[in-house]
Length: 221
Image (cartoon, rainbow, N blue to C red; front, side, top):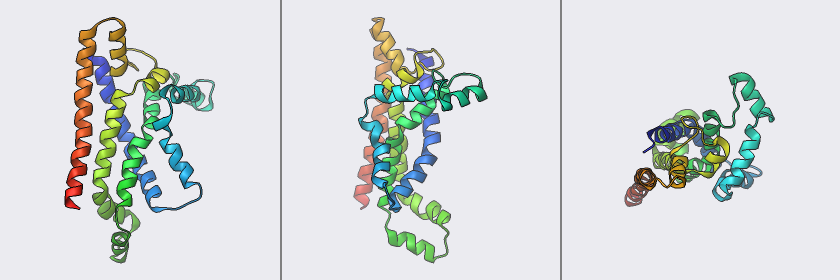
C-alpha cells in the first residue's frame, strides 16, 4: 500500500472541494436563475469534461500550464517553479475537470427552489445575500452535498488528466490512481488490489451518500 500516494489523493480531493464549492455555488445559482445570451454554450463548456477524452483535456491543460504559456510563465515568475508537473498545477487541473460534477447538481438544486419563496423573502425585507444564505442554500443543500461527494470521488479516481498534467512524481503528483497503475506494471498485484479496494470503498460510500440523499428528498416531496 502506497500511503504517500493515497494521502496525496486525499489532499488533492479535499483542496479541490474547498476551492470548487464557492465557485460552483456562484455559477450554478446564476445558471439556475438568469437567462442570458449564449447560456447554452456556457453550460456546454462546463459539461465538456464529461465527454472529452481525459488525454485530450490533459493535453490542452498541459499546454496552458507550460512555462511558454502566459499562465505558466506568470506562475513560474511568482512561485519559482513550473505549474505543469507540480501539485499546484494538478490542483488547478482538478478544479477544471471537476466543474460539471460540482456545478450541475447545484444548478438542478437551485432550479427546484420556487420563485415565490424567493419573492416572499424579498418582500420580508431580506437582501439578495440573506435570501441566498437563509432561504436558497438551506433548500438546495442536498445539491451541495451531492456536488461535494461527486467531486471528491471523481478526484480520487481520475487518471488520464492527472498523468498528463502532473506526471508521476512521488510525493508531488503521484496519486493513488497512478500508484495502482505502477503496481500493476510491476506485477505487484497485492498492493494494486489493496489500493483499488480502498478506492472502491470510498467511491461507493460517496455515491451511496448521493443516492440516499436523493431518496430522502423524494420521500419528503
